[in-house]
Length: 360
Image (cartoon, rainbow, N blue to C red; front, top):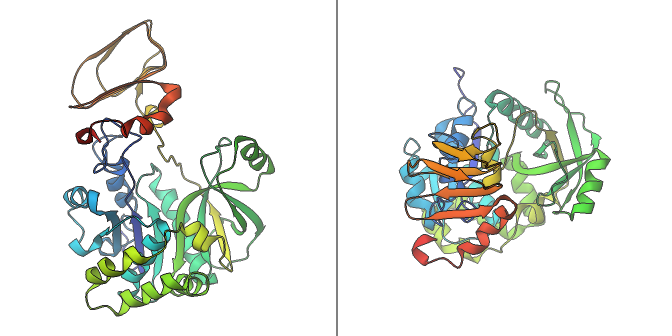
Protein backbone atom coordinates (compact mmCIF):
# COMPACT_ATOMS: atom_id res chain seq x y z
CA UNK A 1 0.00 0.00 0.00
CA UNK A 2 1.58 3.20 -1.16
CA UNK A 3 -0.25 5.90 0.74
CA UNK A 4 1.31 7.21 3.92
CA UNK A 5 -0.44 6.31 7.15
CA UNK A 6 -1.80 9.25 9.19
CA UNK A 7 0.75 10.15 11.86
CA UNK A 8 -1.90 10.64 14.55
CA UNK A 9 -3.00 6.98 14.44
CA UNK A 10 -1.63 4.53 16.99
CA UNK A 11 -2.28 0.82 17.44
CA UNK A 12 -2.02 -1.35 20.52
CA UNK A 13 -1.56 -5.05 19.81
CA UNK A 14 -2.36 -7.19 22.85
CA UNK A 15 0.09 -10.10 22.68
CA UNK A 16 -0.05 -11.87 26.03
CA UNK A 17 -2.04 -14.97 26.88
CA UNK A 18 -1.09 -18.55 27.58
CA UNK A 19 0.04 -21.32 25.25
CA UNK A 20 -2.12 -24.19 26.39
CA UNK A 21 -4.66 -24.80 23.61
CA UNK A 22 -2.04 -25.60 20.98
CA UNK A 23 0.18 -27.98 22.87
CA UNK A 24 2.58 -29.58 21.99
CA UNK A 25 3.84 -26.79 19.71
CA UNK A 26 2.71 -24.02 22.06
CA UNK A 27 4.29 -23.35 25.45
CA UNK A 28 3.85 -20.72 28.15
CA UNK A 29 6.62 -18.69 26.49
CA UNK A 30 5.32 -19.46 23.00
CA UNK A 31 1.54 -18.90 22.86
CA UNK A 32 -0.77 -18.99 19.85
CA UNK A 33 0.19 -15.60 18.43
CA UNK A 34 3.85 -16.64 18.23
CA UNK A 35 3.17 -19.85 16.28
CA UNK A 36 3.38 -20.38 12.53
CA UNK A 37 0.05 -22.10 12.10
CA UNK A 38 -0.80 -20.70 8.66
CA UNK A 39 2.38 -20.66 6.62
CA UNK A 40 5.70 -19.01 7.33
CA UNK A 41 4.44 -16.10 9.47
CA UNK A 42 3.11 -16.01 13.01
CA UNK A 43 -0.28 -14.56 13.90
CA UNK A 44 1.50 -11.60 15.53
CA UNK A 45 3.43 -10.90 12.34
CA UNK A 46 0.21 -11.14 10.33
CA UNK A 47 -1.49 -8.69 12.70
CA UNK A 48 1.31 -6.16 12.20
CA UNK A 49 1.20 -6.75 8.44
CA UNK A 50 -2.53 -5.91 8.33
CA UNK A 51 -1.73 -2.42 9.62
CA UNK A 52 0.69 -1.66 6.77
CA UNK A 53 -0.15 1.73 5.29
CA UNK A 54 -2.84 2.31 7.94
CA UNK A 55 -0.79 2.95 11.09
CA UNK A 56 2.84 4.14 10.93
CA UNK A 57 5.13 1.35 12.10
CA UNK A 58 6.70 3.57 14.74
CA UNK A 59 3.19 4.07 16.20
CA UNK A 60 2.53 0.36 16.83
CA UNK A 61 2.83 -0.75 20.47
CA UNK A 62 3.03 -4.45 21.30
CA UNK A 63 2.09 -5.29 24.86
CA UNK A 64 3.23 -8.69 26.09
CA UNK A 65 4.40 -10.22 29.38
CA UNK A 66 7.76 -11.00 30.95
CA UNK A 67 7.52 -14.68 30.07
CA UNK A 68 7.03 -14.00 26.36
CA UNK A 69 9.01 -10.76 25.96
CA UNK A 70 12.19 -12.37 24.62
CA UNK A 71 10.26 -14.37 22.02
CA UNK A 72 8.36 -11.27 20.86
CA UNK A 73 11.53 -9.18 20.60
CA UNK A 74 13.28 -11.94 18.64
CA UNK A 75 10.33 -12.11 16.24
CA UNK A 76 9.58 -8.40 15.77
CA UNK A 77 12.85 -6.71 14.91
CA UNK A 78 11.64 -3.81 12.76
CA UNK A 79 9.88 -1.88 15.55
CA UNK A 80 11.74 0.45 17.93
CA UNK A 81 12.75 -1.39 21.12
CA UNK A 82 10.55 0.89 23.26
CA UNK A 83 7.50 -0.19 21.19
CA UNK A 84 7.55 -3.62 22.84
CA UNK A 85 6.48 -3.42 26.47
CA UNK A 86 6.16 -6.32 28.90
CA UNK A 87 3.64 -6.12 31.72
CA UNK A 88 5.37 -6.80 35.04
CA UNK A 89 2.48 -9.12 35.93
CA UNK A 90 -0.93 -10.07 34.53
CA UNK A 91 -3.67 -7.60 35.47
CA UNK A 92 -6.29 -8.23 32.71
CA UNK A 93 -7.17 -5.98 29.77
CA UNK A 94 -8.22 -2.72 31.49
CA UNK A 95 -4.82 -2.02 33.15
CA UNK A 96 -3.08 -3.21 29.97
CA UNK A 97 -5.04 -0.74 27.86
CA UNK A 98 -4.47 2.04 30.41
CA UNK A 99 -0.73 1.38 30.14
CA UNK A 100 -0.99 1.74 26.37
CA UNK A 101 -3.05 4.93 26.66
CA UNK A 102 -0.26 6.36 28.81
CA UNK A 103 2.30 5.31 26.20
CA UNK A 104 0.34 7.01 23.42
CA UNK A 105 -0.63 10.16 25.31
CA UNK A 106 3.04 10.90 26.02
CA UNK A 107 3.56 10.99 22.24
CA UNK A 108 0.33 12.60 21.02
CA UNK A 109 -2.43 13.60 23.47
CA UNK A 110 -4.94 14.02 20.61
CA UNK A 111 -4.21 10.74 18.84
CA UNK A 112 -6.66 8.13 17.61
CA UNK A 113 -5.94 4.72 19.11
CA UNK A 114 -6.84 1.24 17.88
CA UNK A 115 -6.76 -1.85 20.13
CA UNK A 116 -6.32 -5.23 18.45
CA UNK A 117 -5.75 -8.79 19.69
CA UNK A 118 -2.61 -10.41 18.26
CA UNK A 119 -4.07 -13.88 17.73
CA UNK A 120 -6.90 -13.51 15.21
CA UNK A 121 -6.74 -14.64 11.60
CA UNK A 122 -8.00 -12.08 9.07
CA UNK A 123 -7.08 -12.46 5.41
CA UNK A 124 -8.94 -9.59 3.71
CA UNK A 125 -6.63 -6.68 4.55
CA UNK A 126 -8.49 -4.19 2.35
CA UNK A 127 -11.83 -4.70 4.09
CA UNK A 128 -10.13 -4.81 7.48
CA UNK A 129 -8.60 -1.39 6.86
CA UNK A 130 -11.87 -0.08 5.45
CA UNK A 131 -13.73 -1.02 8.62
CA UNK A 132 -11.01 0.42 10.87
CA UNK A 133 -10.88 3.61 8.82
CA UNK A 134 -14.62 4.11 9.27
CA UNK A 135 -14.33 3.25 12.95
CA UNK A 136 -11.55 5.81 13.38
CA UNK A 137 -13.62 8.49 11.64
CA UNK A 138 -16.65 7.60 13.77
CA UNK A 139 -14.53 7.92 16.92
CA UNK A 140 -13.04 11.24 15.81
CA UNK A 141 -16.32 12.75 14.62
CA UNK A 142 -18.43 11.66 17.59
CA UNK A 143 -16.04 11.61 20.55
CA UNK A 144 -17.40 8.14 21.36
CA UNK A 145 -15.78 4.78 21.96
CA UNK A 146 -16.17 2.44 18.97
CA UNK A 147 -16.16 -1.36 18.76
CA UNK A 148 -15.97 -3.72 15.81
CA UNK A 149 -18.52 -6.54 15.87
CA UNK A 150 -18.30 -9.86 14.06
CA UNK A 151 -21.35 -11.28 12.29
CA UNK A 152 -22.24 -14.49 14.19
CA UNK A 153 -22.18 -17.67 12.14
CA UNK A 154 -23.45 -19.91 14.94
CA UNK A 155 -24.69 -19.48 18.55
CA UNK A 156 -21.27 -19.67 20.16
CA UNK A 157 -21.42 -19.74 23.98
CA UNK A 158 -17.74 -18.88 24.46
CA UNK A 159 -17.80 -15.36 22.98
CA UNK A 160 -19.08 -12.14 24.48
CA UNK A 161 -21.83 -10.40 22.51
CA UNK A 162 -22.66 -6.82 21.59
CA UNK A 163 -26.34 -5.88 21.35
CA UNK A 164 -27.00 -3.14 18.83
CA UNK A 165 -29.58 -0.42 19.27
CA UNK A 166 -30.62 2.21 16.75
CA UNK A 167 -28.52 3.35 13.83
CA UNK A 168 -26.27 6.29 14.65
CA UNK A 169 -25.93 9.36 12.49
CA UNK A 170 -22.22 10.09 12.08
CA UNK A 171 -20.93 12.26 9.25
CA UNK A 172 -17.90 11.68 7.08
CA UNK A 173 -18.12 7.88 6.66
CA UNK A 174 -18.63 5.76 3.56
CA UNK A 175 -21.64 3.44 3.32
CA UNK A 176 -20.77 1.30 6.35
CA UNK A 177 -23.53 1.73 8.96
CA UNK A 178 -22.69 2.69 12.54
CA UNK A 179 -24.93 1.59 15.42
CA UNK A 180 -25.44 2.64 18.99
CA UNK A 181 -24.49 -0.14 21.39
CA UNK A 182 -27.46 -1.00 23.60
CA UNK A 183 -25.40 -3.19 25.92
CA UNK A 184 -22.61 -5.72 26.18
CA UNK A 185 -23.58 -9.26 27.09
CA UNK A 186 -21.32 -11.74 28.84
CA UNK A 187 -20.66 -15.23 27.45
CA UNK A 188 -24.14 -16.82 27.33
CA UNK A 189 -25.24 -20.38 27.91
CA UNK A 190 -26.10 -22.25 24.67
CA UNK A 191 -29.85 -21.54 24.91
CA UNK A 192 -29.30 -17.83 25.46
CA UNK A 193 -26.81 -17.76 22.59
CA UNK A 194 -29.52 -19.26 20.36
CA UNK A 195 -31.88 -16.51 21.50
CA UNK A 196 -29.28 -13.82 20.75
CA UNK A 197 -28.78 -15.11 17.22
CA UNK A 198 -32.53 -15.25 16.57
CA UNK A 199 -32.89 -11.56 17.44
CA UNK A 200 -30.68 -10.40 14.57
CA UNK A 201 -29.24 -7.49 16.59
CA UNK A 202 -26.35 -9.29 18.30
CA UNK A 203 -22.74 -9.46 17.15
CA UNK A 204 -19.70 -11.22 18.56
CA UNK A 205 -17.46 -8.93 20.58
CA UNK A 206 -14.08 -9.26 18.85
CA UNK A 207 -12.12 -7.21 21.37
CA UNK A 208 -11.29 -4.53 18.77
CA UNK A 209 -11.70 -0.99 20.06
CA UNK A 210 -11.15 2.44 18.51
CA UNK A 211 -11.19 5.80 20.29
CA UNK A 212 -9.49 9.14 20.57
CA UNK A 213 -7.18 9.72 23.51
CA UNK A 214 -9.36 12.57 24.91
CA UNK A 215 -12.43 10.28 24.76
CA UNK A 216 -10.83 7.27 26.47
CA UNK A 217 -9.20 9.43 29.14
CA UNK A 218 -12.51 11.16 29.87
CA UNK A 219 -14.30 7.81 30.26
CA UNK A 220 -11.53 6.38 32.44
CA UNK A 221 -11.66 9.48 34.65
CA UNK A 222 -15.41 9.05 35.09
CA UNK A 223 -15.65 5.29 35.54
CA UNK A 224 -12.24 4.04 36.64
CA UNK A 225 -10.25 6.95 38.11
CA UNK A 226 -7.45 4.70 39.41
CA UNK A 227 -6.60 3.86 35.80
CA UNK A 228 -6.91 7.50 34.73
CA UNK A 229 -4.44 8.42 37.49
CA UNK A 230 -2.07 5.76 36.17
CA UNK A 231 -2.32 7.26 32.67
CA UNK A 232 -1.57 10.72 34.05
CA UNK A 233 1.43 9.42 35.95
CA UNK A 234 2.79 7.74 32.82
CA UNK A 235 2.28 10.92 30.79
CA UNK A 236 4.34 12.95 33.23
CA UNK A 237 6.96 10.28 33.90
CA UNK A 238 10.61 10.81 32.97
CA UNK A 239 11.16 7.03 33.13
CA UNK A 240 8.22 5.17 31.59
CA UNK A 241 9.52 1.66 32.37
CA UNK A 242 10.29 2.48 36.00
CA UNK A 243 6.80 3.92 36.51
CA UNK A 244 5.20 0.84 34.95
CA UNK A 245 7.28 -1.48 37.14
CA UNK A 246 6.38 0.47 40.26
CA UNK A 247 2.66 1.04 39.71
CA UNK A 248 1.26 -1.64 37.38
CA UNK A 249 1.06 -4.41 39.98
CA UNK A 250 -1.03 -2.15 42.23
CA UNK A 251 -3.80 -1.79 39.65
CA UNK A 252 -7.04 -3.78 39.99
CA UNK A 253 -7.56 -6.86 37.84
CA UNK A 254 -10.37 -5.74 35.54
CA UNK A 255 -11.41 -6.49 31.97
CA UNK A 256 -11.90 -3.47 29.74
CA UNK A 257 -15.50 -4.57 29.09
CA UNK A 258 -16.39 -4.57 32.77
CA UNK A 259 -14.27 -1.57 33.77
CA UNK A 260 -15.31 0.71 30.96
CA UNK A 261 -17.17 -0.47 27.87
CA UNK A 262 -20.28 -1.55 29.80
CA UNK A 263 -20.37 1.78 31.64
CA UNK A 264 -19.25 4.33 29.04
CA UNK A 265 -21.64 7.14 28.21
CA UNK A 266 -21.76 6.24 24.53
CA UNK A 267 -20.37 3.30 22.59
CA UNK A 268 -20.78 2.81 18.84
CA UNK A 269 -20.47 -0.37 16.82
CA UNK A 270 -19.43 -1.14 13.25
CA UNK A 271 -20.06 -4.59 11.83
CA UNK A 272 -17.08 -6.25 10.19
CA UNK A 273 -17.07 -6.82 6.43
CA UNK A 274 -13.91 -8.94 6.61
CA UNK A 275 -13.30 -12.61 7.34
CA UNK A 276 -12.44 -13.41 10.97
CA UNK A 277 -11.36 -16.43 12.97
CA UNK A 278 -10.13 -16.32 16.55
CA UNK A 279 -8.46 -19.72 15.99
CA UNK A 280 -9.63 -21.14 19.29
CA UNK A 281 -8.17 -24.67 19.01
CA UNK A 282 -6.79 -27.29 16.64
CA UNK A 283 -10.14 -27.84 14.93
CA UNK A 284 -10.04 -24.17 13.87
CA UNK A 285 -6.56 -24.64 12.40
CA UNK A 286 -7.73 -27.71 10.52
CA UNK A 287 -10.05 -25.62 8.34
CA UNK A 288 -7.04 -23.95 6.72
CA UNK A 289 -4.94 -27.07 6.06
CA UNK A 290 -4.81 -29.21 2.92
CA UNK A 291 -7.74 -31.64 2.93
CA UNK A 292 -8.02 -35.00 1.18
CA UNK A 293 -11.17 -36.60 -0.19
CA UNK A 294 -11.85 -38.29 3.16
CA UNK A 295 -11.77 -35.05 5.13
CA UNK A 296 -8.30 -35.54 6.60
CA UNK A 297 -6.71 -32.13 7.17
CA UNK A 298 -2.92 -32.03 7.22
CA UNK A 299 0.21 -29.88 6.87
CA UNK A 300 2.56 -32.79 6.07
CA UNK A 301 2.95 -35.80 3.80
CA UNK A 302 0.10 -38.15 4.69
CA UNK A 303 -0.82 -41.69 3.73
CA UNK A 304 -4.07 -43.18 4.96
CA UNK A 305 -6.35 -46.18 4.71
CA UNK A 306 -9.95 -46.15 5.89
CA UNK A 307 -9.34 -42.96 7.89
CA UNK A 308 -11.78 -40.07 8.05
CA UNK A 309 -11.86 -36.46 9.29
CA UNK A 310 -8.52 -36.42 11.10
CA UNK A 311 -6.27 -33.40 11.72
CA UNK A 312 -2.53 -34.01 11.37
CA UNK A 313 -0.04 -31.20 12.07
CA UNK A 314 3.68 -31.78 12.47
CA UNK A 315 6.80 -29.69 12.94
CA UNK A 316 9.09 -32.68 12.46
CA UNK A 317 9.02 -33.28 8.71
CA UNK A 318 7.85 -36.86 9.30
CA UNK A 319 5.61 -38.73 6.89
CA UNK A 320 2.45 -39.73 8.79
CA UNK A 321 0.35 -42.82 8.07
CA UNK A 322 -3.18 -43.37 9.40
CA UNK A 323 -5.05 -46.69 9.33
CA UNK A 324 -8.66 -47.14 10.38
CA UNK A 325 -8.99 -44.04 12.56
CA UNK A 326 -11.35 -41.13 12.45
CA UNK A 327 -11.95 -37.77 14.11
CA UNK A 328 -8.49 -37.62 15.67
CA UNK A 329 -6.14 -34.71 16.27
CA UNK A 330 -2.49 -35.75 15.85
CA UNK A 331 0.13 -33.07 16.50
CA UNK A 332 3.87 -33.68 16.67
CA UNK A 333 6.59 -31.32 17.86
CA UNK A 334 10.25 -32.14 18.42
CA UNK A 335 9.61 -33.12 22.04
CA UNK A 336 5.90 -33.82 22.30
CA UNK A 337 3.13 -35.82 20.64
CA UNK A 338 -0.59 -35.20 21.04
CA UNK A 339 -3.27 -37.69 20.09
CA UNK A 340 -6.84 -36.64 20.92
CA UNK A 341 -10.35 -36.94 19.55
CA UNK A 342 -11.61 -33.84 17.78
CA UNK A 343 -14.52 -33.56 20.21
CA UNK A 344 -12.06 -33.14 23.09
CA UNK A 345 -10.05 -30.30 21.52
CA UNK A 346 -11.08 -27.92 24.30
CA UNK A 347 -9.67 -30.32 26.91
CA UNK A 348 -6.09 -30.01 25.68
CA UNK A 349 -5.45 -26.99 27.90
CA UNK A 350 -6.57 -29.03 30.93
CA UNK A 351 -3.94 -31.70 30.48
CA UNK A 352 -1.09 -29.21 30.05
CA UNK A 353 -1.04 -28.44 33.79
CA UNK A 354 -0.26 -32.09 34.52
CA UNK A 355 2.70 -32.25 32.13
CA UNK A 356 6.35 -32.00 33.22
CA UNK A 357 7.35 -28.37 33.68
CA UNK A 358 9.80 -28.45 30.77
CA UNK A 359 6.91 -29.32 28.41
CA UNK A 360 4.60 -26.54 29.51
